[in-house]
Image (tube, rainbow, N blue to C red; front, side, top):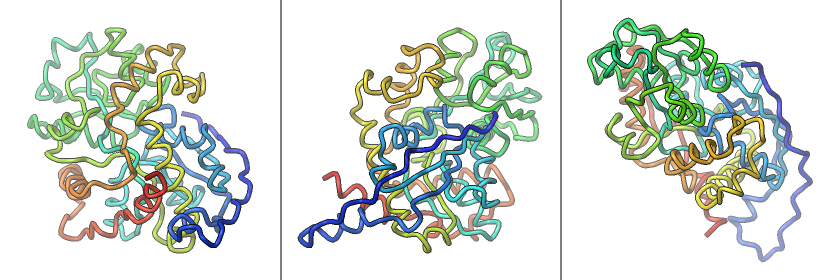
Length: 346
């Protein structure tokens, strides 16, 4: 997918609080040290990243004094590369990236949770449905993922393992998460697909796919992973968080604000907020897809207690180079910023 650049309007300086203001609120609204920054996103059109889109479209970044450029990539692994390479300051992507980076000797930390379920669906294309009736039949199949190494690849791999199939027994093909998915499906490039909404709802409605695994709900996620599986987060190098704590807090404030908005937004509110290009020329479809995944959004930006351990267990089965004994889970996330952000809405 070509990189799309989106810029939130420049934010004005936040007005100073009175002396009587609560210290917590004062901290949350202090002027960011780095008001202009770049965020790498692993597939902005997907509902997986809807809190980021909402924070941008509704002006929540601006309210926090931030001018954020969103750089969109075909998958989470590509967005991570941008953060690692320094072309982006922070990333919007799956929590598991922090685990992989720690295993490579680099400290990254998630500081605001957007998804408490992966929202990923594994499905077989209808022409192959008689051959690939269950995940156990996937040996030798060509399976589309947003990008190899991304969370769509992870969910696919875990589901395959449950069925007795190893990742190296299938061919994973990067197909992005937008219109490129339709091209891969219609062009016969793949036999099956692991991807996100609204694309998966669109393909289901058209009869193009048959769903086999669904992690758009907390229940479905627990069936696959055996616990709460944290999904989309805001993450950054530990060095960024330590150097720019006020900026990190401002980002967390905006995302938690968006998380909360999504809990009660009406269909009309949603359609007014989302850019027309992301609606796939079918507003009712987009709304249906949103309701399919709404439960997956975090209500408060906080990492669930069992989430990191569940993720580590899944990842160590996904990549044998990841040794659970060598990972410090407490260094992969923090709830400090989300907790302060959530306190503003009580």
